[in-house]
Image (tube, rainbow, N blue to C red; front, side):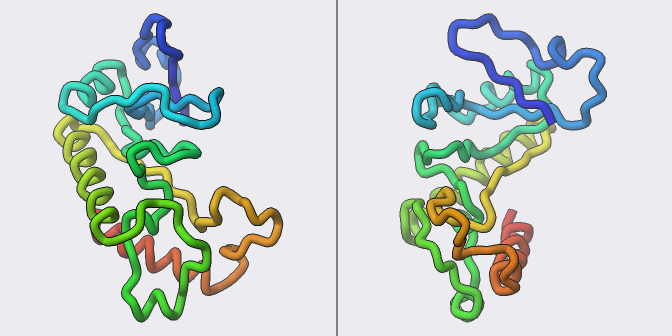
Length: 173
C-alpha cells in the first residue's frame, strides 16, 4: 500500500504519474491533509462531495480511506470500532470495554458518525471506488498505559469482544 500526500502549495501530481510502472492493486487516497508535524491535527478540511471524491478518482486512486483517524478527532472522526458499533447489553456485560472511549459519548453522537460513514461509502460506491477504514483495535487510549495495556489481545475476552464488534460492523456496513 502506498499513501501519497502533498504539503499545501506544492503542485499536484496525479497518483497515476507517480505510480507509473508499479504493480499495485490498491492506490489509497483520503480527503483532508493530516499534519503530523504540528501535534497531529488536520491541516486542511475537505468536504465529502461527489466532486471531491471524483477528483481523487481522476488523480488515479482506486480506494478511499473513509475516515481520518490521525491522532486527534477532527469532527469526532471514528477512530475505534466502538465509535461506530456496539455490542448488545448482554455481550457488553460479558465482554466489557474497560478503557473509557474518547469520542463524543451517546447514541446520538454514534449515529452521527455512522450516518457520515454511510454517506462517504455511498459517494465512493457511486464513483466505483473501493473503501477502507482505519480503526484502532483494541482501544487503549493511545497506549497511555505503557506495557500494562488493559485491553490486551492475549486476553481471550478481549479477542472475543473484537470478534463480536467486527461481526456487527460487517453486518451494518
